[in-house]
Image 1: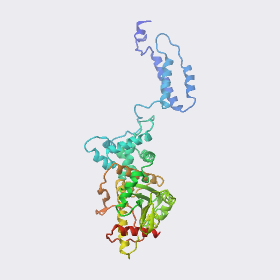
Image 2 (image 1 turned 90 degrees about the vertical axis):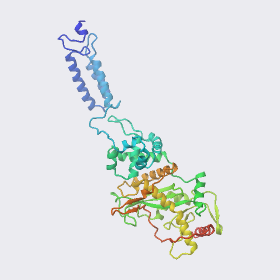
Image 3 (image 1 turned 60 degrees about the vertical axis):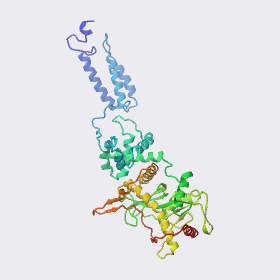
Length: 456
């Protein structure tokens, strides 16, 4: 072997890399170009591997000396192209045509400084610690596969966007700019987080048992209603006119388009049961008859604890407090109502209304924090019920961890510049109630309670 060949120089003095001549390098470059094109065209072809083996035989060229094997180089290029075309390993950098993600609200939430807690509560309604706990629980359900194009959105990014949308009520178009994701991805993110929360917290909305039940019964008994489990009421979620549904069905008594939600809460404002999805024109009694709460109560599965004796030999295993929109029954106690009332009836109605104030406070906290369900907005009527149930789950989580509620969220400035309390969607019952205030002792209240149960 000559000194020129040993030093990587050809006979004409031209530099050769790896012992290859200019002609060989040109041939290899042409082969690589053809291979890349064919790899792109045949990446999904089941016979691609067979074609690679056949081409390997055709490209096998005789070599002499210690020079690199041209066929081996071609084989290596083919294997790499095949792996890239079939997604064998991700790209180190995204495709040039893929839009880069920028900063925005999500980058601000990731910054750690003295204002992190307040910023989290303003944007996501919770502290960073609670957000991390929810993220750790949902991450296994939201982890996405690395694709050929770019690194996917991380679970904490997806969860933060869904919480931000529910908390602020911004549209998909506005919110996606703050979190640097596209509109289609944001819709998918909300659906994925909704499904993950329903899967990870299946028992967060449940009827109280054990010590929790004793605490609930004691809190309502202090209001003058022994063995009462909670208060029941409904609220309207205002929406734009559905595109693929009859608008008259969703038009309520206020001539606004809405979807109804029936909720049971205790004195601690925790949601015990929720039933949502029917149009705003449906009556309260119809909603109750269609709910699983009615089936469980009528079959004796709901109130099965020790009974309590009331005056007039009235025995009760448990009941709920409701307004005049519900019928009087053995497990729903409603006010007397009417204008001309006996003083005893007036005392009972006022006590009952005071106890039912927990429902209004619960709806105020629920809709005040998650303002998407406070404002009129465009929605998918198929996914709206699941999202409202998820918001009720978040409502219970924040109560359990002791996150306080800012009462300023219940006030807003109208178009006329006047500051007023927000509309919680709680329509007054059709029959009037006595609103006079008076006080009565516990015995009179128990007598009136027993009388209401006898009247059913």
